Amino acid sequence: MAKQFPELDTTQRKFIGEQHIFFVGTAAPDGRVNISPKGMDSLRVLGPNRIVWMNLTGSGNETAGHLLETNRMTLMWCSFTTRPLILRTYGTAHTLHVGDNGWDELADMFPDHRSARQIYDLKIDLVQTSCGYAVPFLEYQSDRDTMQKWVDGKSDDDIRAYWVEKNHQTIDGKPTRPAD
Image (cartoon, rainbow, N blue to C red; front, side, top):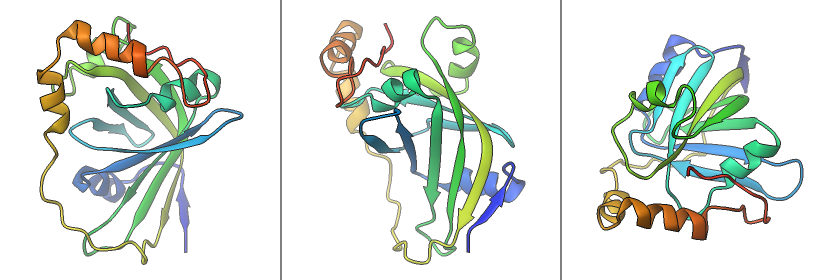
């Protein structure tokens, strides 16, 4: 049975810290809903009602485009180990780009990554847990090094050119304003 909370408690924050993957869900008022898996060392819980995560270069940039139109965001974690649990945080998110007020302070919380496009700052207004009884057991082996190898083979100009080519609009054709 799902349970709802106004904020993250200590146990839920610990659970988030133990997970190697999370999922982000966003949607514009019209068009497609996006659900995207995220990993690496890219998320920080800053309090019972605040999470920030650094978004790295990817093949799309749906979250950025959606947040230009509506600031709703859901983050979700699933336990793939012994304790069955699904945890979701619902709220509103603000996008920061390099050079924006607050970028440097938040970026300092993460490992340096040349392909960081945005930082999303989520203000949580609802936390929900559910059972996760049907989620399979999966064993974590390691993070992939594919992203880092891709970045290592590119100059900063190459990365920005990729953003222009691949990340300037959503799959619905809406603008995203990737980092400049």
